[in-house]
Length: 232
Length: 232
DNA sequence: GCACGAGAAATTGGTTATAATATCGAATAT
DNA sequence: ATATTCGATATTATAACCAATTTCTCGTGC
Image (tube, rainbow over all chains, first blue to last red; front, side):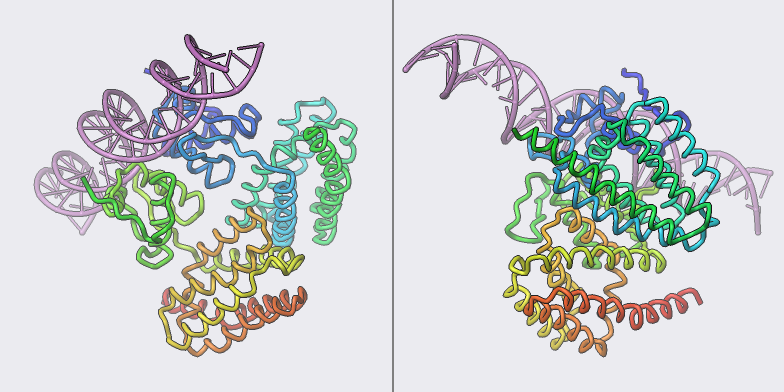
C-alpha cells in the first residue's frame, strides 16, 4: 500500500485526487523535472504520486487539453515540445492579450495590490542579487506580472494567459540564464511598478511595450542562435 | 455487450475511444442537445456512447479544461453556464485574437481558399433564404470565418479561438434567432468575402470591425434586454 | 561488426468489479 | 414546522484483468 505524498504546497486541499495530480505533473514540467519530449508513463507517475492509474490518465488528458502534454496513439504521452515558431506565435498572442489585461486592470488602479507588487519586486531584486536559480526567479516574475493581470478580474483571460505562460515556459527560462541581462530585467519590472504607483495607464502599457521590444531585440536573436547551433 | 455507435461524422476514425467521446459530448453541447446547467452523469453518457465510464470521465476532464464543463466536487459535472459579462469578456478577447488571425491570414492571400469561401457563402445565403434552423446556420458561419482564420496557419491561435467560439456559442445562437437581421448578417459575410477576393488586408479588417460594431449595437442590447426579463 | 527479425516484455487503452465517500431526498423524531 | 437520521444514488478511486501494439532484447545471418 503506497503512502500517498502529494502535498507539494502544504495547505491546499483538493476536492479530488485528480486535481492534485494535474497540479503535481504541471509543477514537475514547470520546474524542469520533466523536460520537453520526456515520456510520461502512467504507472510510473501513479507510483510517484501514490495513486492508481485512473487519476493519472485523467490528469494527462487535462494537460493535453492545455497543450502541455501530447498524446501519441498507443505510444503514450510526452511533454510537449514547443518550436521556436510556436513560441513566436504564442508570444504575439500574449502581447495582444496582456495589452487587454493591462487596459482592464488600469480601469481601476485600486484593484492592483500595490504593496504585494512592491514585496515581489524586492524579492525579485534579492533573487537577482543572489543569483538564485532561474526557475525561482522566473516564478517570482510570473507572480509579479500576474498580480497586475489579475486586477483585470477577467477569469477567461487569466486562464488563457496562464496557459500561454505555461507553454512558453521553456523559452522564458532561457532568458533568465543570462546574468548580464539582470539590470535590464530589473529596470523593466521597476517601470511596471512605477506606472502602477503613479496610476498611469499609458505608462503601464509603455512599460510592457518596452519589455516586448527587449524580448524581440535581445532574447529572440539568442534563441535563434541557439536553435541554429542545435541544428548544426 | 452494448453496440458502440459513436460515428456522428462518418469518415473520421479516432485513435482512441476517448477522443470520440470528447467530440461526441462537445457536439451534443454545441448542438443544444445538452443545455447550460444540465448535469452530465457519467454512466448515462457511458451508456449512450456504448463505452465504460473511464473514457467518459477522461472526456469530461478534457472538456473542463476547455471551460465547456464545470466540475462540482463529489456532485458531478454540468454544462458550463456563461454569464453575460463573461460573454462580453470572451467577445473582446475574440476581437483581439481575430484581428491577429486576419493580419496573419492577409500576409498571404494565396492561403485563403477563395473557392471554399464562395461555396460556404452561397450555402449560408441558401440557409438564410430557407430559414434553416439556427444551429445549422451558425455552424456554416463558423466554418466560413474559420476558413479565413485557418489561413493564418497558427495552431495555438486557432485552438484558443475555437475554444472561445465554443464558449460563446449560446449567445451567438441568440443572434441567429432574429430573421429580420438576416440581410445585415449576409451583408457582413459578403464584405469579408469581397475583401478576400480583392486581396485587401485593410478591407478585411474593416469588414470584421463592422461585424463587431453590429454585435455591440444590435446583439448586446437584445441580450441585455433578455437578461433583464429573465431576472424579473 | 552490424543489420535484421522473432519472440518476449512492457505499455497503453479499455472493461469490469468493488468499495469508500459525499450528496440529496425522504422519512422520522423533536 | 424544523432538525436529524437514514438510505438511495452518484461520484471518486482502487484493483484486477484483457487485448492490442509498441518497444526491447537477443540471437542469427550476412
